[in-house]
Length: 121
Image (cartoon, helix red, strand yellow):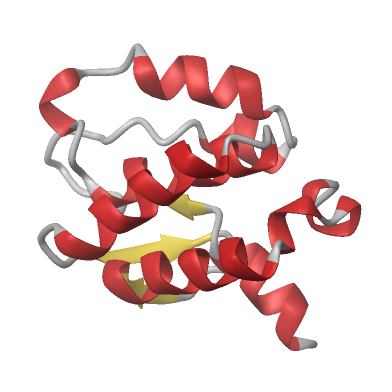
C-alpha cells in the first residue's frame, strides 16, 4: 500500500471499542468526507470527552479539510500533548495517539489536506 494511502486512512480514527463511555468522533461523517457535519457532531457531543485524542484528531482533520488550518493545528497540537491512547484507525491498525497527531501536523505543514485526492477519501 502506498505511503499516501496509509497516512490518509490512518488519520481517520475511531475511538477504541470498550465497555467504557464511547467517544464521539463522527466516524461515518469523516469517512464520507462530510467535514462540516463531522465538526458539528463532534462539537455537540459529550463535553466530558472534549480532550480525548481521537476526538481532537478527527476534529482537526475536519477543520483542515474545511481550510481552517489554525484550528486544525490547535486540535493536532492538543492531541499530541494529551494522555496517550492506542487508537484504531480506519484501516484497522492500532496506533499511538501522539504519533497520529504528529503525522497530522506534518501533513498540515505539507498542505496534504488541500489535496483533492485526500479530501475525496
